Length: 292
Image (cartoon, rainbow, N blue to C red; front, side, top):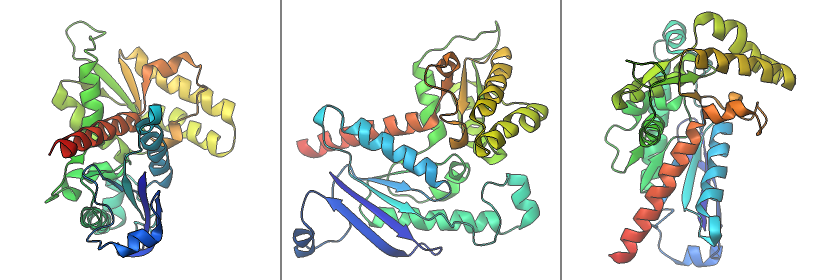
């Protein structure tokens, strides 16, 4: 297993790097290094906007790729929690960003692009961004990228397409519901799911203001039962609208419901799809490299 965790400052410069590897540090120093990782299936992970999302994704990537005694996928993480240098939250909606500061979006995008370039130079052979919010700017961040760059919305859409879901209402496309903690987090799904023929259904304003946001507030106040009841209502409201699956597009909404809750069978965690896509690519790249 070869994995690197990198912390960067607001300019994307590396100020601390910790290497975890089965080989000794002395051996690493003795070998000429043009990049941090040299494996053909090395994964570059852009973290930062949501540290929790990054950690959840890493847990899935490590455990799922090392099942049955297999070697974990090599990866490097570039984490920068302070992406916003303007004093405004990156969790603001796109409209709020425009109202608060016209340059805010540009600052965030440039910061994330610097992370992507750093990962490419560090030896990453594919890039992933396990954050619903960051993927709203995927097109700008991935511009001129030299490696495969997986979009979380596309990963979800492909997996749903494979399921061959049937519309619950005659004469309609398959409907997919999306619940998120902010407007920006739904963008990856409203952009990509329709390309696969899905109709995206979002909660109305009243549901967001009086059910979804109070559910998150209850969780923050450690009122787990209250959060569960409100989230169940939000999910049920979308199910009544004949959606086949409800995407939980915020880490705040994950793990609120207990594992045995039957409603979870109707829900999807996008990080699962992104992790599976990444692992599938990594295993394929490793096989191709061995044959060459």
